[in-house]
Image 1 (cartoon, helix red, strand yellow):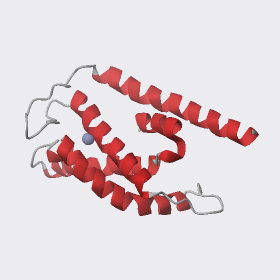
Image 2: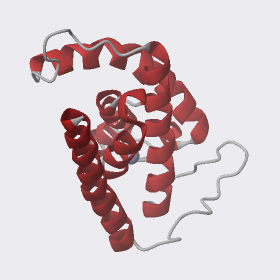
Image 3: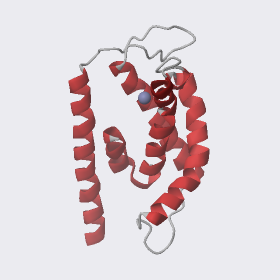
Length: 157
Ligand SMILES: [Zn+2]
């Protein structure tokens, strides 16, 4: 979520953090089922770039309406209900699923991002897991800072 908050700060209303977050949940349903049942490949087809394309399409289609409802319940839509336009939903879902595969491929040896071309995972271990966690949390903190700084400035003008 950290990088998502950072991207939100940069792209502002061209990016839906809700759809991005929904995509993260969709992406990890398969590993969760594998963990619970103890069967199958932990990071299987969902954690490939081809899988990411399919899950992004699904997440964008389902996430647009779910996020609009979610924003309403969170009270983030003051006055007019917030509408998420389709291209924003798709952009957010694609950024979500591709960054998910990329970050998970650094962390987990069993991710095969370029399946079926190759089963190699060239990104595994390019940075340490603790460095990766730091990048994610700091990008979230910095992103939140930028986001609120921009909203504060917009309110003043
Ligand atoms: Zn994952």
